[in-house]
Structures are given as structure tokens and as C-alpha cells.
Length: 75
View 1 (cartoon, rainbow, N blue to C red):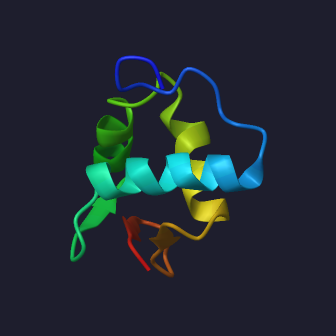
View 2: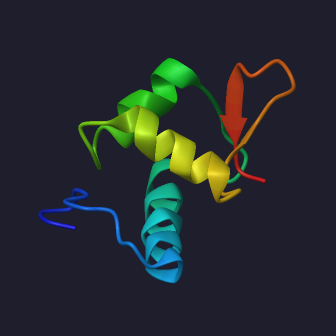
């Protein structure tokens, strides 16, 4: 990270996971559910590409989506 923003995603899975854990802990509260626009706005604090970051967070199971796909929350 450079100045609190993601400069490059680490290649090593463990390093990438550590980065993503940091981001999710800063961006989302434990009992919070966020719609995609609100989540994207928070993720923009870390990157210019919130869609990629959001996908990584879901792929690493650090975020889950509601059954209708409209709300993201912590597992």
C-alpha cells in the first residue's frame, strides 16, 4: 500500500489475504450490511477499482452477499 491505498495486489495468496483482511476490517463493521453503491464508495478509499477489490473480498470469503445479491456483509 502507498499512502493507505493499494498500489499493487500481492501475488502470494497469503500476502493478498492479509491485505484484504486489513481492508475489510477498516471498511465494514461487524453488523453492517451494505448495498453495492455504498460498499463501492467505501472501497474507493483503498483503490480506484472498487469492483476488483469487491470481487477479491468475496472470492476470499471475507464478504458474503445476501441471497438476492443486493447486500454485502461480513460472514
